[in-house]
Structures are given as C-alpha cells and as structure tokens.
Length: 166
Ligand SMILES: Cc1cc2nc3c(=O)[nH]c(=O)nc-3n(C[C@H](O)[C@H](O)[C@H](O)COP(=O)(O)O)c2cc1C
Image 1 (cartoon, rainbow, N blue to C red):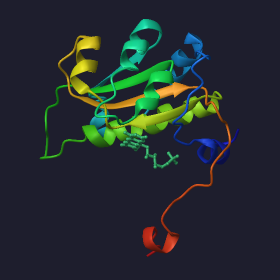
Image 2 (image 1 turned 30 degrees about the horizontal axis):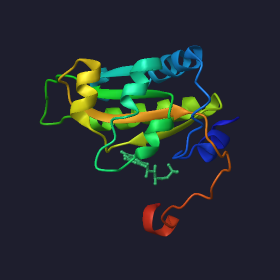
Image 3 (image 1 turned 90 degrees about the vertical axis):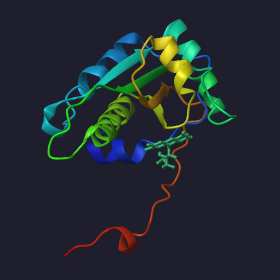
Image 4 (image 1 turned 180 degrees about the vertical axis):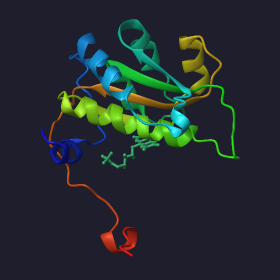
C-alpha cells in the first residue's frame, strides 16, 4: 500500500476477530516504526506498553461504564502513558506528541494488514495496576484483525469548514 492507501484504509475497528491473535513480530515492527515519531524537543516523554497474551487479556477487561466493551475481543494493545516532563516556555507538548505517536502506530499497523482503534475511555486505574505504573495513561490502542474488513466511507467535515488556503 502507498501512503494514501494506508490512510484511506485505516479506520476504527470496533469488532475484532477474537479467534485471531497478532504475531509478536508484527507488534515489534509497529513498535520500531512508531519509535521514529517526532516529538516536541525530541523528548518522547511517554512510555509505550505493548501488551499481548495474558496482559492483553487483562487489559481487554478494562472498559469502563459500558463504553468500549468491544475491547474484550481484541488480542493486543499499545498503551501510552505520560512520563514526567520539564515544561519549558510554558508549553507541555506531551498530548500532541502522543497524538502523533498514535498516528504512527495506527498507520504502521494498517500497513501490516492489522486493524486498530484508539481509545480515550477506559478504566485507567485498572490498567495502571496491570502495568504496575502510576503514570497517567493517555491512550489505549487496540490492535487486531477485524471481524468484518469492509472499509467504510470516511465521515469528515467539508473541506470548506476545515481547510483555509490563505
Ligand atoms: C484521542 C481519540 C480518542 C478516541 N477514543 C475512542 C473511544 O474511546 N472509543 C471509540 O470507539 N473510538 C474512539 N476514538 C476513535 C474515533 O471515534 C474515530 O477515530 C473517529 O470517529 C473517526 O473514525 P475513523 O477512525 O474510523 O476514521 C478515538 C479517537 C481519538 C483520536
């Protein structure tokens, strides 16, 4: 796939094939590629936990208030936690950096034939306990194979409401 195909193929998967695990080598490849993501001041002030097997099973049960229950069928997760940070010039870039990192993770996964869903809603404390960290968990990214691989039409704002060529 070329870049445009990868971007058009990436979509949030909310129904994973519970019977299909992800090869550890693919997870490692995603981790290696996404490590190259840019970050403000090149600080990379985050930890990336790559969960598979029993750890992933535990994380898959860390949905909250009935949201994102589809996590239960997902075989692997990338969990991104914020690390301590020294703010300079009054700017904390960590959320931006983690957003960029998440793009790299999801696009790299798509390139490898996998499906993903970025999650902002989860039981943070449960995941902290599973991973043995007190660091704030910013995002959880589901990685697996879709139960249905139909590519949906993208629903986005009109160009005129979004893009301003000036
Ligand atoms: C920061 C962030 C948090 C998100 N949290 C959730 C979530 O908790 N549950 C979910 O199903 N989707 C979540 N999404 C996925 C978005 O809903 C999705 O990306 C958006 O609707 C566009 O659809 P697409 O990814 O299929 O193109 C999140 C996406 C981002 C970037």
